[in-house]
Amino acid sequence: MEGAGATVLVTIQKVYYPLLCVVGIPANLFTFYMICFRKCGMSDTAIIYLSCLAIMDTFYLVWVILVDLTLTFWLLQPFWNSNPWCSILGVLQYGSLYSSSWIVVVFTIERYLVLRSTAAKQHFSQAQVTKLTCVAIVLVSHVVSVPLGWINIVSPVNITVDGHNVTLPRCHYRDEAYSTYIVWITTFLSGGIPIVLVIIFNYLIGYHLCRASNLFTKEERRVMRGRSTRGMLRRTILLLGTVSVTFVVLSLPRFVTYCILRTKYNNENFNRNDYNIPINVAGDLANMLQNLNSTTNFLLYCMVSRRFRRELLQVATCKAKARELGSVLTHTTMRVFSVANHKALRSADPVTVVLTNLKLTE
Image (cartoon, rainbow, N blue to C red; front, side, top):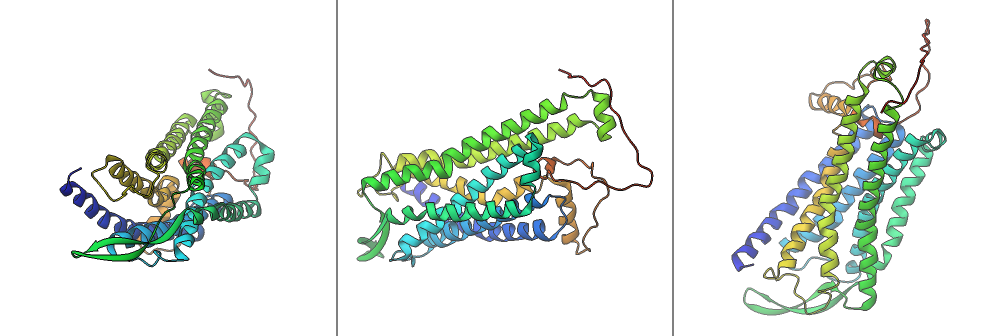
């Protein structure tokens, strides 16, 4: 890559990362408010998972995008180029990255178990269980991230500033065998394994919904639901496919380039800032995609809900909180993410529906 092209890429990142902070941090905090304090038609467990995800994405944007990348491009000597911040920042960054990735994974697995088993539904629908699960994910993620504090070291480096050679301390990668092992393990725990699990369990959820819909004829489904189930089913499977594809598209490039950088180019003499080397360009672009994921999660998991959009409109127009809508049979695409136990509604004139001639339709 020629010098002009390298300058363009650096300039883009100088604008891109501050913009990501300006947009992403308020968006995640606003999503937290909407999920926790507005009636968006989600179950208690979904509220806990998604609010925790929004908070951890915010921490990721602060530690990685704001403190690390933004300061790198705008300051000559960021504060984390000294001890102990060189080690602490690595732990905080990967702790938030682990937390965000595994909250998505555990939430997806929990939705699958709830759809598959009544006993699992009764267990996982308890808010206390979900809170403990989220706390455990965050704590374990940060404990597992402690070894990441050992892969960087602070040492004096000669650099050129305004035509003058100066020596400044720099936090850089430690060229040791154990650092390579830690990076490999971290890369798979934060990228490879979560990607595979999200794809598998989203597929299983879609497959389970397809099989469940085939237990009844079209007429029987209309009697039970009051509308066509297949339309909702198609929207749900489309959502699950979108979530899986988006997660993979934004995460997989960084997973690949990071493995290459920390194995083939894992030595002190390699200049990560030399954009004449194609892997450096690919690595920076992959990082931009990965970091974008922390600002788009709320769109993928929340904006698909009609109730969320309705509440968003209420907030935007400064109207009072919307009242709960009456029907427990209201269908939204978000239903697959908000399975909850609904209490039986009392009625002065109860109606009993009996289904007969049930058969499996292919």
